[in-house]
Image (spheres, protein in one colour):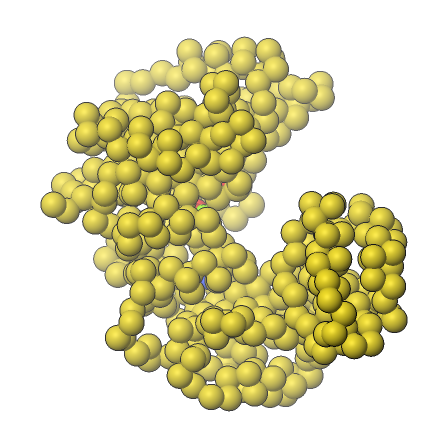
Amino acid sequence: MELKVVKFGGSSLSDAKQFQKVAGIIRADETRRYVIPSAPGKRFDGDEKVTDLLYSLYKAINEQGNAEAVFARIKDRFNKIIDELGMNLSLDCEYTKIEKDLRNGASREYAASRGEYLNGIILSAYLGFTFIDAATCIFFDAEGNFDAETTNQYLKQLLKAYPKAVIPGFYGSLPDGSITTFSRGGSDITGSIVARASAATLYENWTDVSGFLMADPRCVENPRRIELITYKELRELSYMGASVLHDEAVFPVRYVGIPINIRNTNRPDDPGTLIVPGTEDEIPDTIITGIAGKSGFVSITVEKDQMNKRYGFGRRIFEVFEKYKLAIEHLPSGIDTMSILVNANSFKPLRASIIADIYRATDPDSLVIDEHISLIAVVGRGMVRNKGIAARIFRALADANINIKMIDQGSSELNIIIGVEEKDFNLAIRSIYAEFVK
Ligand code: ADP
Ligand code: ASP
Ligand code: MG
């Protein structure tokens, strides 16, 4: 039996007009039964996202700022939606409770989650669907990690009792009942969790672009749409900065192979992008599927004669990063060199200690730190079948006069990652795009 879970992002629910479009989409298809709303996003360039306002509210309450003014802006966003939809609904009791909770020490995550919570109440009333508070069915463990199995078992049963429901995205509860959230953009993950628990046939993720594009539209003009992409490619692209879908959103659906369809709320007839488990037999018509990138990396290059013969050399380096709980993002290595790429903001406060520890642990011949590095991932399942992709990337960058700081080819041959200086980031993406997409 067909069953769709539909998630609507912040821009899709930013005002009453957008709510009407969303309701139209849901009502057009009886199988769209479970709805995951985000908090109201930006209505126009320069507007404020309600989630950002809620973080400001938390700060204002806890640091003696002008909380009334911020809260007024938040209430105004929701009240306007209700009024313009002509609904008979008041959120006044909810506002009072939120303010009371925050004054009594409720967390920053609790504050942030109220955008999805309130938007969920409005949307469920507008659609005539049951409202299910995510705090009652999305569970995190005591360390704050999402508890996939407990949630899935519980939610599977719960949803059986409600054929049509609205479940707010982004948050859930800790074992003590308090609220916590996923990282920013986390409503995408909630959608995926609900899709798995309800054994959906499709997870539709409605946003403000007509699908996953081959590059960030803020960098490349009018990038081509990706029609079909695998979970693995998507994970690489979204982890590397293609922010259209949260990079952790593939995990829940990956277990059960539910496809995800990225769609545009403002152009509902566009087919969007279909994200599927795998396409063994299908030969893609483009060599590369997409390009994404992120800035803000530091590379630490350690050189030591005959490094390859020194048993445990790598382990000693890893232990340093483990000690400081600093995630290693990439690890390109040569015969006598190893580069460790880490997030610059996390590295900064630990810099002196980490360098000292690496010297102590490995006595390197040299240790060079390169700052302001951007990483660009060129991803495609078609790359395995084609020779000379790396050469084409390098030529495109050389022609644009861009210096390559590092290269890392994943062993799956699904991606090639290139490090460039931050100043060359946009030009590098545009040059690679132009080389492969004529
Ligand atoms: P939502 O609020 O619906 O969750 P997001 O802002 O999180 O939407 O994601 C959609 C945005 O992602 C687009 O408006 C676009 O600016 C940005 N984006 C970045 N990379 C890509 C890409 N490769 N394809 C499409 N959109 C992208
Ligand atoms: N509203 C949250 C955010 O702005 C979650 C989301 O939109 O997915 O990050
Ligand atoms: Mg998003």
